[in-house]
Image 1: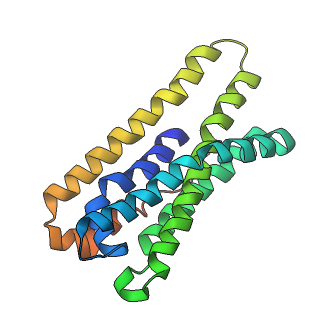
Image 2: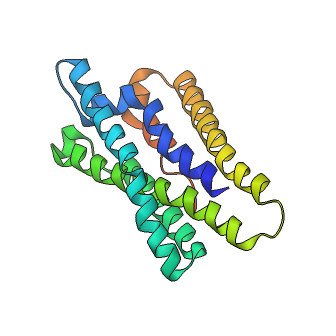
Length: 180
C-alpha cells in the first residue's frame, strides 16, 4: 500500500504541471515556466538512486521497517507542505525553492521505499518472494493511475481559475502515513 501512495504523490506533480508552473514558476513565456517546472521534476527523479543508497544504509543499520516508516513519513510531510506553501506571487523566489526542496525529499523517499520494501520481503518471506516483490513494483502503476483519475476528476469539476486558486491544493495534502 505504501508504494501506491508514494507513486501517487510522486506523479501527481506531473498532472498539475499547468497549474503549478503558473503558480510557482511564473514567466511571460509559458515554455520557460514549464521548463523550470519540469527541471524540478527531473531532479527529483534523478535523486532516486541516492535515496536507494541512503535508505539502504539506514535499513542495513536500523531495520527495513524503520526505513519504510521514514520514507512514507517523508513523502507524506513533503506532499502536505507542498499543498500548504504560498505561491510565487505571495513569497517570491522562496516558493519555487520550497517546491525544489520538497520534490527532492520526495525523490529520496521514492528511491528508498521501493528498495526497502523489496528487501524486507526478500529477507522475511519463505515462500512467494517473487510474487510479493512483483506486487510492490506493480503497485507503483496503481498509484500513477489513481493520481491520473484524481487529477482528471478535479480538472473536470473545477474551471481553470478554481484550479489556480484552490483546486490544486485539494489534490496534495490528503492522506495519513500508512505503515507496511
